[in-house]
Amino acid sequence: MLFALGGVLVLLHIVATVVFGYGYFRDELYYLVCGQRLAWGYVDHPPLTPAIARVVVSTLGDSVVALRLLPAFAGAGVVVLAGLMARQLGGGRWAQLLAGLAALAPPVYLATTSIFTTISFDHFFWALTTFLVVRLLATDNPRYWLAIGVVLGVGGLNKHNIALLGIGLAAGLLLTRTREHLSTRWPWLGVLAALLVVLPHLIWQAANGWPVLEFAANAATGKQVRMSPPEFLIEQVVSLHPVTLPIWLMGLGYFLFGRTSRRYRLIAWAYLVPLGVLLATGAGRADYLSPAYPVLFAGGAVAIERLLSRRGVGWLRPVLPIVLLLGGLAVLPAGIPLLPAGAMAQYAGATGLSERELEQGKTASLPQWYADQFGWEELVIAVAGVRDTLPPEERATVKVLTGNYGEAGAIDILGRESGLPHAISGHNTYHLWGPGPEPTSTVIAVGLPLSRLQEVFGSVEQAGVVRCVYCMDYENNLPVYIARNPKRPLAEVWDVFKHYD
Image (cartoon, rainbow, N blue to C red; front, side, top):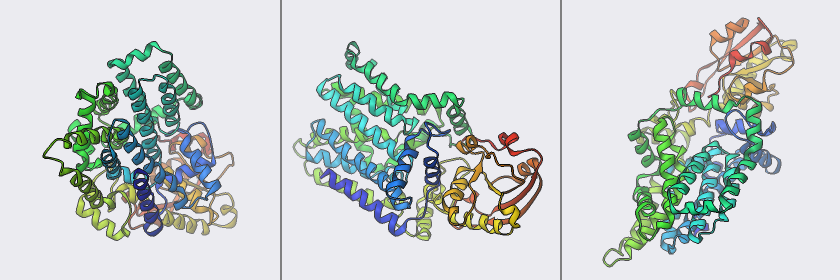
């Protein structure tokens, strides 16, 4: 049953990608390039996702369909793990079904598993960790701490966000009777295992001046949409789908107050502490907490199953799964691109999705997670057209300078067929890679303000423009410049273009 639910999710993603797939997502292009330049770290993310991209490209190719298979399976894994956690908590088949459906319905889960990003794998590693925690608490076997540490470490090589779960588990361990495990060696071995797994990444960060700290600070102040605590909580309800609200609230109450679930108190703290951290900072995106809910779905499903076993309310048993199923179907286009772009724009406008900003100042007729899949081919065509106007001697040495990693990734991945040179950029890890050792007197620049180019180059002229229909607004009507005669070598002024966010 659970595997059938997971299979439905995978099938939906495959159909959407094949039939209505819009193209590479901005971050997918970036991860493909990072996969070509494997390292133990990058400015804005750990090394696992680029390594997975490298494996996918080596085995299945770099098509959009191939790239999105693993995220779909990761999403299916979350559905299965939610149901298995319900079973481990003592739930019957109905509770397992309800937990699986609850993990299938949220738009944020559908959206993050429809594209190749660190977030889709983050959901899986978080769910796998909490499954092991449930096993640990159900059996009171402290040896599970070692496996928990290993999974947390691997999750940390995927996305730094899983550190929130680690903090929550540590707090729960101290605040509940599970602290008795501290008298054994297993929690300490778990911590050691997690640190050993992430140690190469930490060494890379230290060797490169901890760029992740600058990235996180800049993202918090200049990129992420700041939300008040009420706004953040409302966003949790919306992104997880209102129909799941009773389930995860029941789950939180089950773990926090239930008499028969005292042994599972730690799980409540593993949710509440990360929630408190994000509420206190005010800059966390709503999806930073979204991986925390599958275990709450499991606990809520078990609590509801027991509640409905009482006389007089058994008729709700068939109703609740149907409500979840219908609720999920109603918002399916919000998470999976099952409509042509024009129809999706109308849907987004009618439902208000196009008005939601995930990042400051970034708007489009489509939601950002869809709009960022448009415009890259138009960008490559425009840049290639400008390149073709150059005389042969300039064309042989010209470089393409972009304003962000999405534009650079498009040049590097999609521009290969047009023979475009590798892009250079000051954005995130592209800045660390630098402008290259080869001297150049001419660059084609896109996505950069004219004033900054004039600061560096003696001559700057607009030679083209990028136009796209459904892309992000700031990627549309984008001037393409030819910049010549740098006042100083690019390597000496490279920090002028640096921005980590």
